[in-house]
Amino acid sequence: ENLISNWVELGDVAPFFSLPKGGRHCFFSHYFGNVLFVGCNVSSDVGIIHHNKENNSWVLLELEEGENVSTPTNDDDEYTFPTGLAVFEMGICLACSDGRMCVFGFDNKSEE
Image 1 (cartoon, rainbow, N blue to C red):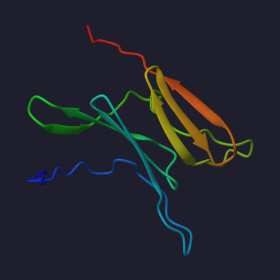
Image 2 (image 1 turned 30 degrees about the vertical axis):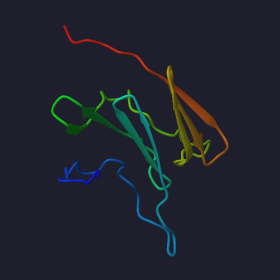
Image 3 (image 1 turned 180 degrees about the horizontal axis):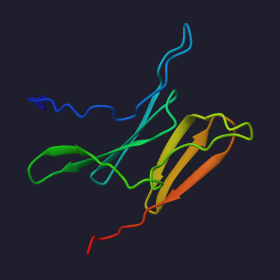
Image 4 (image 1 turned 90 degrees about the vertical axis):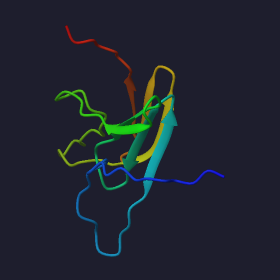
């Protein structure tokens, strides 16, 4: 029997804007390897959570400025939002509310 024995508070995984009246959240997630990707229909950013299997801990990854996975703005500089999320071996595909498909590649950098 697999029971969850503890919870981890991670804060704002996919920080979102205020909801329109009568609106609701719709979350998109994909678990790949030891990483969980989380998007929300009212947030332009995708949260990335790392699972350390050795000590069974979860950590919200904070990427460098400009390196985050997010939907683009439109021609009027208004935010677009995710409508779908797919993760594959080389990167992430993010479907956007304006009809665009954004692709982000994985790039592993080590600090020296």
